[in-house]
Image (cartoon, rainbow, N blue to C red; front, side, top):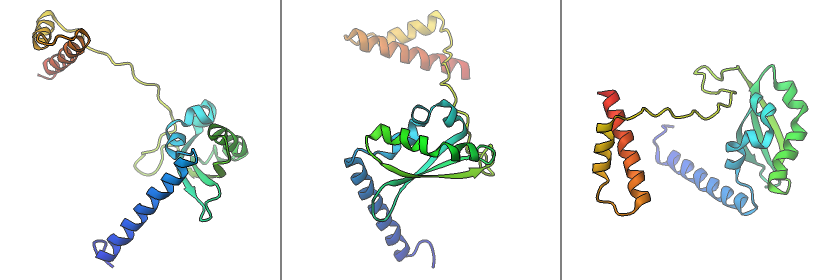
Length: 172
């Protein structure tokens, strides 16, 4: 069967409709899976977050509890297996009830799949290094925002114009 057949599109559409309903029901119970995926270092702790990555939260057919799937390296899998109950308690403590009934551990190479997409290193946010603008750039930025009467807005527009002009000079 071709991927573009009408029947195939209907199946895809139906599955996406079901996903939205599941998400709505889970969020109404206080469980938003994106929170687990995006705040993993705070939930699991830095030591566990360094060796694992949450990749999926799936729901059982009867709707009782979800399964959290964690990705880790082969060497760290036994450590993570021993900590599954502690991790489950930490995740459930965030929501105040047993949102996660099970944790499943899957293994991969240290840099992920063949493309190396998965990294287990949580990077600290980079400090932006803004170039120091010269007087001519500052004067152009001030002139661009001159007609704005609100002081905060004018200052923000001047900073924006200074950044844009500085980057344009660096590239040119």
